[in-house]
Length: 317
Image (cartoon, rainbow, N blue to C red; front, side, top):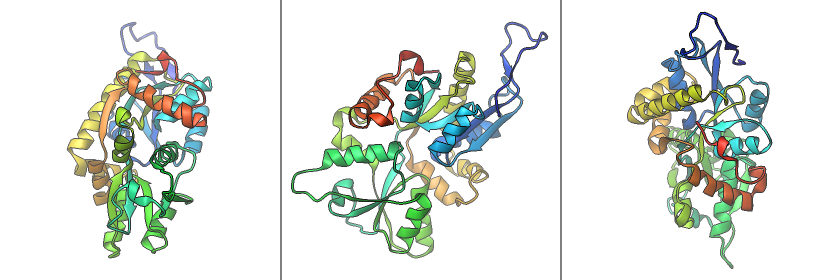
């Protein structure tokens, strides 16, 4: 819902500005779980009486929601916010909280790392977003003369990749949590032998030793609220507190998340939380790490960034 900023003569100049409603949004991934907890605990009650969470399915849907000002804050891949900023939209990256979320799952116990994929097929349920860009960059760096290339097989979505793996029509898949944990949980129920391999972030640290940190996702402020520094700081603090709670109480967090993602069993959600590096850091404090990633993307996949490095005002809160 569009954030209608209310100015009341009864409110003193020192009081926090209030909004009729604030809408948080995100995908069904771990980066969104603290946002869900913020809604459950009404963490921004000082600023609004109506705090909501809205689930989006893909970046294209998010772009529409943002353009219509139906979302105020959203969990996003770190390149999407920079892309929007470089296209002239006044958005702000508040934090980065997810540093590891992509996992290799294989039918073959001998396939433990990305270097074991040479000549093999890998199911990939993303095409233009950040995971695809990171995978392409990693595989290009790992390629060697005379070594067979990894055969990428694009699937419609994660559910398609899961179905192919469970029916024996796929041997390896790269999945974002919690879908990796969901696949392994379903495989256990169906007595299908599958194995969790290396995370893309572990492989990245080996291949890019000077740029081991991979700031993949965090929270972005839309144009509706990007100007409100006090609110942005409050959101960043509340998100960090909720992220700590999720990390420290994975089972309780998983039970809470299932209210938003009823198709996921609690054990799979809990495993996803435990396997994800969830560490919320203000974007202004890790600007150098974000810029290192942006420079790499600008050089190899400029379309993923929409230009050069974002200006200083992009890094919030």
